[in-house]
Image (tube, rainbow, N blue to C red):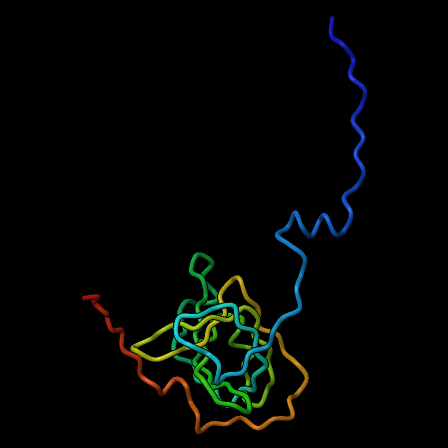
Length: 155
């Protein structure tokens, strides 16, 4: 003889509790300037203007279904404080047209041959924005600064 249990009723979660369950309430993004970028850091949100874009890799064919089309473009981007090379991948390449203003959300700094490169992976976003009113400071290119990893031994 099975006992009948009353049906469970729960109130729908409030928007605040739903945000807490999904990792916390959304916080307003803090915009970073290019000159503030440091090697091997992440979580940057920047508004930058595209100065130039150069395709460096294009693999795969649209006619082949089993090969994924891979495109990589190196773009010089910047703001009024400096400039840096941004590595655009696949769909990001289409957004990076010279003269365009874009917002890079959750961007990270990768090191490539000792120099900094800005990138947005699957956890970030590249969005086209309203045209910016600033001029890019191209004479402060952070990607031209070469870094060297130095191991410090404690005595």
